[in-house]
Image (tube, rainbow, N blue to C red; front, side):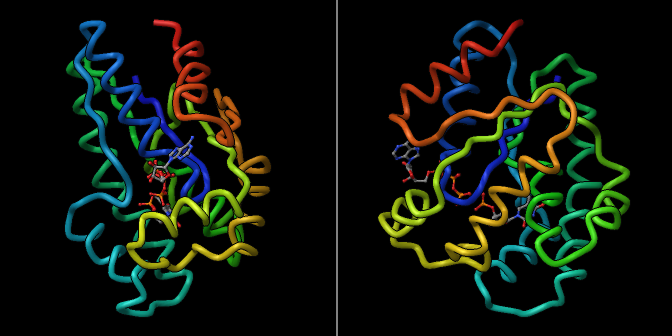
Length: 188
Ligand SMILES: Nc1ncnc2c1ncn2[C@@H]1O[C@H](COP(=O)(O)OP(=O)(O)OP(=O)(O)O)[C@@H](O)[C@H]1O
Ligand SMILES: Cc1cn([C@H]2C[C@H](O)[C@@H](COP(=O)(O)O)O2)c(=O)[nH]c1=O
């Protein structure tokens, strides 16, 4: 089974992904918690772009995310075939929502054709002004997409690109309240 967490920067994806992994493990499940961009070589290159250390075209960045995802999906499928529950902190819906900011959505979907559809996707919806305040508290710099106007458009994009079994969760509450709703949607 693949469960994905999606949403704009600072919405609480990593926090909720970790909480769900811990909860499922406490129930005796074997969980593989993973993230995109990955920590692989392509993911590392993407991270340099996000930190604005290097500049590439929007199309190149989309292709990098798609390439990272091809390699990541091979690992995800292997884990699923071993009976593990895979939780991915971001997956292809992030590409659909973020890269369609400036690129043709149909092309973004096409270059991600070698990915898979998650069994369940949580989209954490947190007002971008709240997310940006959380990001500032972390004090580790502002990345490529972490701008109010961009995040407002991306947040709307998630509603447009949602596919398959998608649950939208209000992220503008306590961590515990958000996780309570996430946990209640898990039917295994
Ligand atoms: N519901 C919440 N209320 C208040 N603070 C939160 C909440 N969820 C997460 N945070 C805090 O906000 C910051 C960002 O959380 P987190 O890393 O989970 O977000 P994220 O969506 O993964 O962000 P990014 O995509 O930028 O990595 C962290 O410091 C986290 O502790
Ligand atoms: C997978 C993926 C991510 N992004 C963007 C979203 C964020 O701005 C960064 C990194 O994500 P993190 O959760 O802050 O570590 O990359 C994207 O534009 N397209 C994607 O496919």
